[in-house]
Image (cartoon, rainbow, N blue to C red):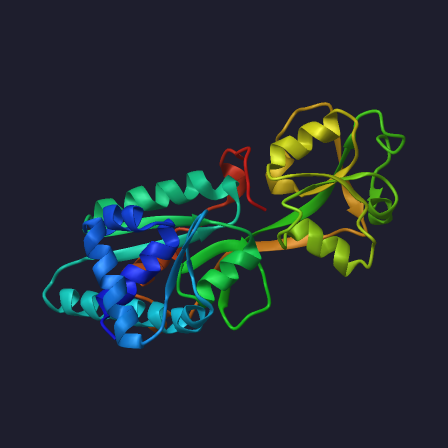
Length: 300
């Protein structure tokens, strides 16, 4: 298989259209079409289908995508190794980020890194911790800032963060010291990202509580505002909402839930040179999240 054609397929699926993939790769749209057609002819199967909402992979192509990603990743690794032998520093680093609170820290890390290695491109991908673990498996990210998940990857802890109950300021339990998790099975619950495996969803499921979800949203701040309006209660990471000053009472949960947040990464020898250097620089200068501004939006 031609690695460049595999890269075209992956880019079309990522961007959602032939024209967008052409812009990303510096091709013409017709060139993208020819490349896809050539690979489909070589494979003897249909790989891509155009739908109303964009381009998607056929069932047969889904089986081949992991192999394509591995081929593209290995080619990038090969090119970086050759470049290093010639005394050049090139490559791409893709960082997964689960917490918006870490955006400022990551941006500062990127700035220092590209000043040192101007030939290296750095990208970021946002998602839940479970989604980023899958992205690591698919080699879509080199490492990720996320909540700890059981896996074969290494984990470097950056901080521990408690989950907290967010309840209206006039709630009967507002003056209590803790908020029982069992209430999430009794009172109206506001859930952010209800269809995704988030930390709050995992916590409720692990506690064996029937989650009484009445309102849903795809924005943490929107959920917070719904709590403030008295529509229900919510469960969040303290990292997300601890600094917000709305008419909402934030309480520790009973039982307490503490999350380990850190960097999840593969064996260094399996990483590209650029990603390994970025991670080494980060580990050399650890950063405490509490010394930085906490930001509003998060995909947790």
